[in-house]
Image (cartoon, rainbow over all chains, first blue to last red; front, side):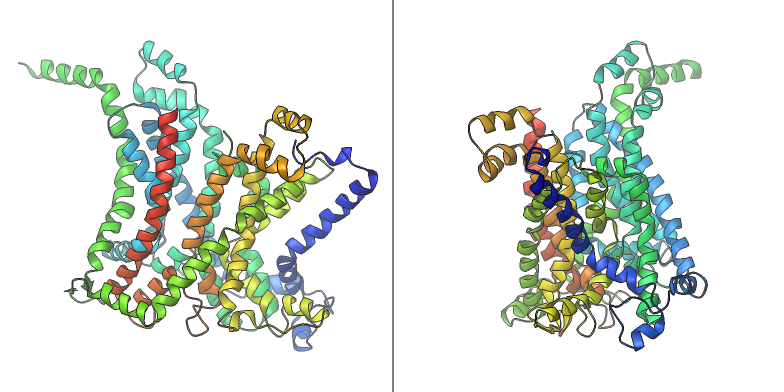
Length: 282
Length: 308
């Protein structure tokens, strides 16, 4: 193990390390903790310039209450859910199929198609912006959740295919050969042999894509406008415009907007990290 | 030949060629989607960059004029020059996330009580949307009450108006971007360190390697896959920087924090008018810059595929 385990060091070094940990963490998360503090302060603290002291009264319930019951925030949150969940399902379903095709079969153009998916995944969004916006307008899907979902599914399929293909590549190929010898049809091999083995990959990918899509801002701004279809990342800017200089409310709003992916991360941590670090280890 | 014989023949044809046809059937929906929404638009943008178009009326063919205009903007040190320069700064400064992430990973790679929770909490910034990171750092930098100025006030410095200063603003935004990016690199290295071969470490110890020498000669070579991915995601992240700039400064003050990704958006889709062709030309330049890196990444991956 590197660096050398701290247990082998002197007691003083161990104590130093253990006290350095929380200090480092506090410094690392300071900007975030500041916002959390702001979000439970009452309005009066800001007019009295009591920015960094303790809240004069606990106003968390009131601030978060205003976010949930007196603003458009719940609608934005709902939009985010309605955009994110179908995208996750769509992209994962499509990439299970493409990953299966590219991971199992040897045919001409296999690597070419695989590299097309990878390359497309790295492209700057701006080169897609005008044509995709046009296409969405032509389909009559501008400013709808469907328009956003369709694009997200297509774009995320690139990354998901990379992920799924490499995962399937690592499965024991003998399984497929054995099934073929038994005369099992190819689509049945996909459904009954490969798909059950892909569960961990599906879980990891779902969590990752959920976070990516929930946090998307650029496409939300390009393809939607207004409260009926914008997700929370774009909604927070109009929320902030509504409550300009009301830092306690903007802080509470930001925390609410950031929370769902954080929850998902903590609940599904193992899958999340497995997905994110795919390929970091040989 | 009777109908029955025909279908029988077809079935057996499908049956015989099952292994050749199946992959294409499975690929079709994914490839179709990807082609329509990702591949085709790249070519459409290339084409569009030769036109002048406001997004509504008819497009007028102008040849290379958009690129000529960009060239003159570059020569005159105008918006395009600023964006390009800032992109370069982003690219270089963002790479700091890699050593910083490695440093934190080494710091956290122990087995004391509660270390798992520490690791997750250090990873936290990556999970939060860049929009929220941008807001958080905007307040962090605020000249009247921001935590940064409060802190440097304790040692008698400041106040600094990070986001209002033309020379500092880009670095201020990059610092905000480095926060989640460092967390990402950290998690890559933590996973990598987990898989470092303990026997090689022991062998290194027996040979008297310690500290830096051990890190450089024994550990880092084994972390190569993690470093490669860290490079890929950091470079792509640096060139994609848009959210933070849009949230924190909207390109200002006086357009000094623009990058190509933001400038393109501004030209094509903002209150300044809809110059789609001109925007497409900027996007093409950004794409070509990115293409150098994409080509390198693909080439590395290709060598690996061959090596299997």
